[in-house]
Length: 335
Image 1 (spheres, helix red, strand yellow):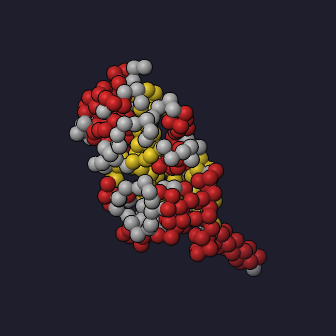
Image 2 (cartoon, rainbow, N blue to C red; image 1 turned 90 degrees about the vertical axis):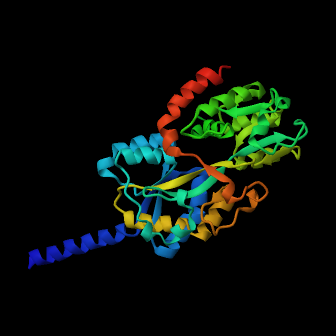
């Protein structure tokens, strides 16, 4: 009888533990203002709807997070990672990702094909344009190749070779008629551009400072969220999402081999729904990935149409960026 009772107790405790486990999931993502926005737009309504609590495990650098996740590969206690495509590709190569069952995502039909794959689901999109001082630039900037105009000599700031994950180098290749797999036009375009370059901005705050202080008059590869800050300095500053396409990238979920995968999949589906997408996008001035979701009011004046967005080939960039950057620093950015 004692054995039977103890067995019943053990089974009850195990069932209770399993039930408790079913009511949570662990997300590795950014904290701070991003974490606050996720909590308000995603975590709290998801818990209210499903009873599943989301624990935020804060991250710093995505590559540092990748190293930590690799180290706990055989004892993973995190279920979902919010990251970028390059870390996702490397994590998949390391064998720490689980496939995402698209059939379990009823909201997947609202995502464009490039925004969802076997090992990732996009969460939001950021696009990049040109910010400039209208009183100092003698013409209206409309296309990317306008920045090669000799009237802009000494007026530009550009990112570093590895800025925005190498997407600036990809952009210069596009400007020359190439792409990520034909990168030679990037270096031809860059050499044409360099007489117009005054400074190389090592960070977003530097690019903002250079433009608002008058050290430069044009800033390339500017996220609109940064321009919202620049616009506070006066009406002389303009933003354009140039023709013929607008570079864009997305952050994404990657499913880890944690203990609460089923809950993580439910969370992914919730986040890519129309309401959570609109709520988060409005709070953080990013574009929603759900095609039914409205563009946030803060970006309405700047955002291009969705069909104008061009997303770089992240797999090629991941493989080749070090070689690109070495050549760029040697042959282009020599000052």
